[in-house]
Image (cartoon, rainbow, N blue to C red; front, top):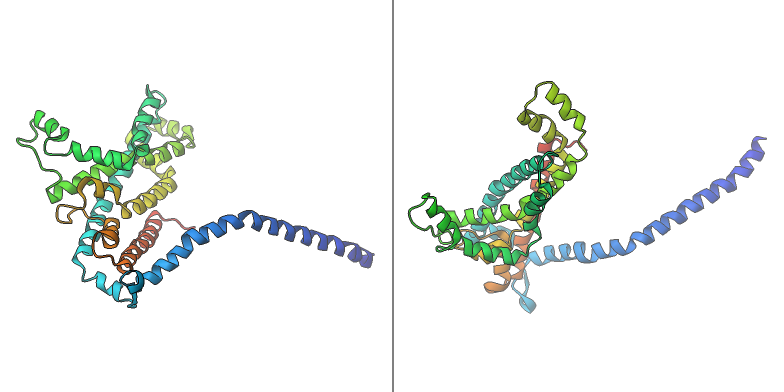
Length: 306
């Protein structure tokens, strides 16, 4: 009987293996186009950019210089200024934006709040506006004769107009305010979506135990939103490291490179200064390295064990 059973099961196993193999082939065919597209438009340019970062010059005058471009970074005052400015934006704007998004999401998740839909739309709307359009508007708002100075003077907070865009410190503040205004609503939507899945009974039990709204926020809301907070922190970090439009259109990197970002410096190296595409590619790889390092740190700080 055992021989008969073995003899009849072998073709069945072979057929099952054949079907599984066929399904695998079909699965690979479905994703083949996506794999080719990602390889062609993402991985291939990354490899080419790294090869380019080992060269200097432009066009037919490109010369292989090895890692000289990377050593040049440490002696480039403009790059150091751009890197410092970008980290200032990152350390100030990202935490402020995440905190504001969390507060707005909790407030707008309250079922007793009237006109919730209006407020949600109003806060989210900035992130779907044109980057160039809103940057130009901010440039006029923070001009010497702009509405911001007029409003502050009407409140007697300042005695004379501030030159926001000509002062190094105030120019950075302007950029930070602009980025925060645009992207807070974007992150708020993620938190609002996550809050819909938080069991209401947890808050009810906390209220019965005498927990205040602030205690509920820190001991229930934040722990439950931890994966989403990690996600938005990483996405916001990547976006800030690639900051370009606001700096270009509001301050043009000035005054005196006081607001220059890494991405704008890459643009200047490629199109504004004497073109040096090799060194520009080197600076662009700094962003890649920073993204990897900061994402790793954020995962560790968040305690993600996966």
